Amino acid sequence: MKWNGHTHTSFCYHGSNAPMEEYVEAAIKLGFDRYTLSEHPPLPKGWIPDEPLMRELAMEERELPDYLAAAFDIKKRYADRIEVLVGLELDYLDGRTDYSLQLLEKTEGRLEDLLVSVHYLPGKGGMRCIDYTPQDFQENLIAYYGSMAAVVDAYYDHVELALEWAASLPYPTKRLGHINLIRKFQKALPPIDGEQVNERLARLLPLLKKSKLGLDVNTAGLRVATCQEAYVPEWLLRECTRESIPFVFGSDAHKPEDVGSGWDWFEHTIKHL
Image (cartoon, rainbow, N blue to C red):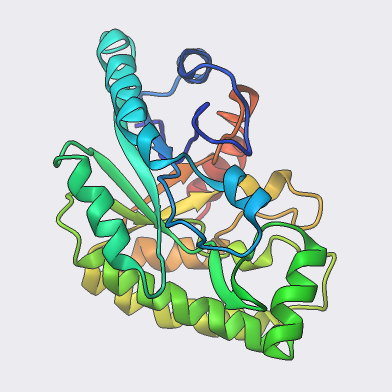
């Protein structure tokens, strides 16, 4: 099955305001059989100290019902052309998982797909985005932790916590989002130790298998000049195949033209595992 399991919509304010229809039409033209709508849900008020940025990160609470209504409408209207799954990309909110559980309750069990991702770490002045800008990463994370290595360990510590928490959520289809997002700015920041990353990823394999969570094979990093690689290394996909850990392609599209971005890399990679 050709499935794009990680995409966004006009409810994402750091993406495109193109209507959902344009994304789904692009997926149909590219031959996708299944398409997951996985928008960022609301965040707690004051979650990060940068208020202007905060407004760009996610929809407001009052918009969640509107997103769900629009997504289920799209699902119904395109049912004879493509299977659309209505989901969310839920953030692991360290210390505020209660807020996320309250949001999930508001969806009334209607979600059909769920990704859990780590976008935030404790940093200077409060929680900080790991994927905002290289300068912000340097000033508010590396300066806070003292070294890139310490930030990397903090990130994977939170990924492990996210995985454990996600495993407890009562949803049949769940994946861990862009497991290597920490590498987004690797070409613009102090070097990341590849051995350290591989060691931390290897530690996640038994946890993934035990939790029965899948993996988001996120290709957005291929489009980022400071990354130029998918957010999942090929060796990890090989190990997932050996351990029967499911994984799903995700272009992480924030505009319609990115719906199929990275599929060729994914298809070639899985054929040669």
